[in-house]
Image (tube, rainbow, N blue to C red; front, side, top):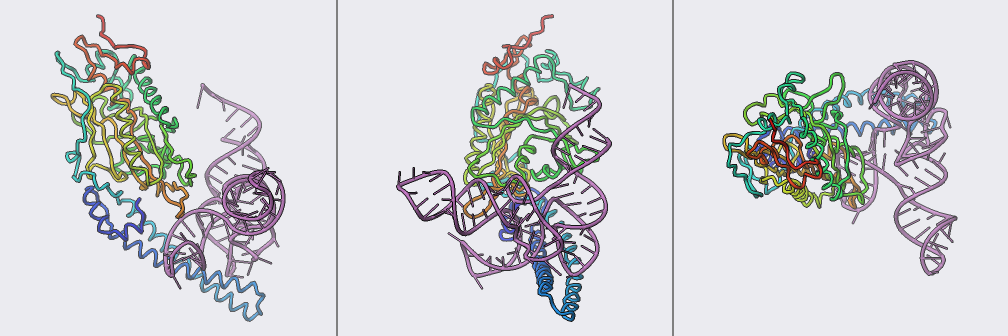
Length: 426
RNA sequence: GGAGAGGUGUCCGAGUGGUCGAAGGAGGCGGACUCGAAAUCCGUUGUACAGUUCUGCUGUACCGAGGGUUCGAAUCCCUCCCUCUCCGCCA
């Protein structure tokens, strides 16, 4: 959520930003509700002050006459207060409901545009594979080598689920450990996080827990849902706390399962492992002072590049367009890996993203630190270290060999214990 | 799941319906003493929102949460939540 005063005092910029991000929110309404709320609040506080004052006079042991008058006056004041309290509560409810729809401001350098077509490519790293044989997509490779089973998963759990089998299982654990070792060296605190979170935390991070457009699974009869990412549980870790400034920056790396409904997502780019209901992810999360959040954003991007360069997977970095940022991000970098099985001739597929959400999430979550000028909200950033399912796509498709086997990148061999998968000898 | 105990400020801990934003202690911060430190002494010490003559001041709210009684509630009543201990079940 944005600061209400900021919205009121920067109405034009806020409205321009809503438009640039292609979102629906009414900043004028928020400013109006905010003013109305403040007017009513002042009125109510004045009445309460009078009530307190009146009650205080009783302590002076007044005469019976005065006493009766004070009680009379107290009753009168008392009768005026509850009605205003109700109105204030209603007003604040609509105020916050509307204010929460307003997205974070965008970085002045973020490319302006309605969707990912406007993303700006910053750089491209690595050499695209040039296969001398007919290449296959990860589904074919995975099924041939008995690494993946989509059909059985559909039978047991539904579409967009999968079994990982044999070396793919070791690949998952190996990739996790590979990423964690890098992050531990960078000073990240390693964590395994809950896979379920309260809706209040989910909302604070900027996800919509319920509703038809929600990408999350909510739990029956509870105000909780399955997490779509450890960003939720890492961001909620310090909710409602004032973090000692000397502990900043806090770097956390969380391993969790991620559950996503992906309702309505179909088409060639969501087949196989690309868009699934459940996967495992190692997520980075940074809590820092506002002054250094942009530096940390660059650092997250660099770590993501280090991880994928280390896996020798070709990728490009894009600066995400305003229309594709979502609500909480101030700026977002995506890493897109080359996926030879994507489309007719291969294509880029999003494999990580790194977002600077500034104080947008911290405000609703109540994460602050003490500064010279009072308590301020921290800045929060998140980035994917490695999303296992998509990483497996990139590995299988880029490292496939003419004989149907798949080579394992050098840096990963110590973590998985083998140098290649297959070929099947039959 | 069953039985019992309890939830007060950064922590421990007191609190008769008005003098309680809350005793006392610890810790933190500032200062005195000291060559320096410890000890001792003095002062200070939360959060949020609003207003403001704005590095301060004023008001309101906050003693687990939500209701109620009352001119007035940390204190009385009701409901709920959570934590702890013991038992049961269990990876």
